[in-house]
Image (cartoon, rainbow over all chains, first blue to last red; front, side, top):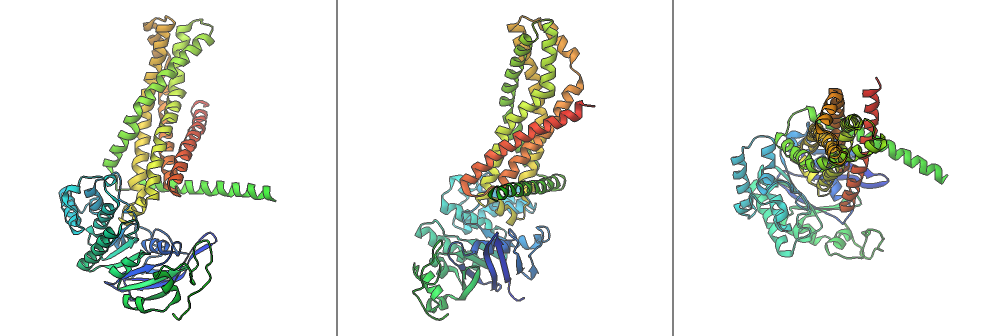
Length: 264
Length: 257
């Protein structure tokens, strides 16, 4: 296994619904990979499988050289300590002020005292363009965009080697989308982290991806660099990035007759 | 065939839920007895579960004690009333009504709140976030609530005992003209330590049930706001039924010997 994150033949079903069907993906160290795909294509299940929140039915997942499928939380603690995660809606803890959210990991594993935790929170918030006046504010008082930024600050606070972004720009206005995309790119560049982003926002793809992979019906059906993405004549990819209703991709709940043809 | 399939689905669902609940309780108990212990969170939960439940438990027991005194007075044909009313009110409140009614009131207030809070955390991915931040949700969310509820319920039951007996005393002396000193003397003479202790043991078990049911239904909630609402309802219904069933079992065990 060569990559920082490697998935091989990962399959996962919920009842009779086969969500992942032998997914293969390799992410090199320091690479920013974006997985795109429609709703229900299995992006979140893939991410949760890597994070150990779901256990795949078959296949292997290597993170930083360790096979993680089937590992208990305790056995994968050294891997988790090196991972940052930005959830779709921030997933900030409502009951804690911003500074406790940002420095949560350090406070829980007792590597930070209160003052050090506040200092880390100030530093991380400044990295995402937020000031120290937010330290004692509770998440409910923040806008969606600010919650995302605080979530990003939390994801990078422990300077992890691997960061995951789950639809980081969903629900944001175009300006805030651009702000978040730039923050992700700058933070990742500064940390030198390996990142995996799942999204269906093509603006994000063009802003942050070194490599893009298209997930469809539980498999990666196309992958390449951002330049290759623009030049590809893959019918599935073209339908997705151009947002066409007609093409080979089946829209949820109905089958759209293929109208786009071409080679992969 | 349809009827058999329905019965089969019911039993499969029942055994599946029982298995899930058993695993949840095992994980919760494991989290209770292994470090880290979140003292700050336990303190917060003691305030929320114990302190803020005091008014509702006190009012419930006061009116129950008063109503019990009225029933016994008129039901007992008013003969030797001071002795009968005081002793039966004391016995009924300490052994049964204090812990059970207190438990049911706390179940309505606390079990629902726990299920709603943890359920919301589940559907907004906060529980997933805890896990990715190397924090065990059972130790961080479940254990503090279970510890706090199990510790607080006996204290609340004791408060319910005192105020419930006081309710009977107020009704007895103000409405029926009982002699206050004799009423108190009769209560003290009749009441045994075991009567109070058995009620406190029951209350501790009820506290455990209330917190576990709230956490379990919240933890397994899904489907957005509707799912959280369903989890809240299920938590209150399940904890109330289990409190009554556990009360019957413990009464059989404690008093049949």
